[in-house]
Amino acid sequence: DVPPRVDPSDIAAMAINPLDIPWALELANAERCVLQFDIDVILAGEAVHYACSEGGLILGEVDRGRQIWTVTYLANGALETTLAGVAAAWY
Image (tube, rainbow, N blue to C red; front, side):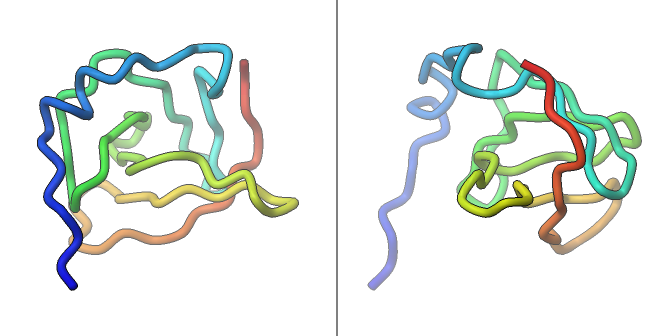
């Protein structure tokens, strides 16, 4: 089955409660990322919630299901995402 296509305007219109997610993250690779309040970029069906200091992007949500949080990270110029650990988070 093919998952339903998500209209980017639906995701962009969703309100982000700043109390629910960190406003900044530092990844295990030392890249620092800041929450974007106006989501207007959708990649691979995921909203880009964070833009990072070296040009990377975080797609989708922070996975808090493990002891070390992880994110789907797209490095600047990369064609594939990687799973990156979160070293620090600021609320």
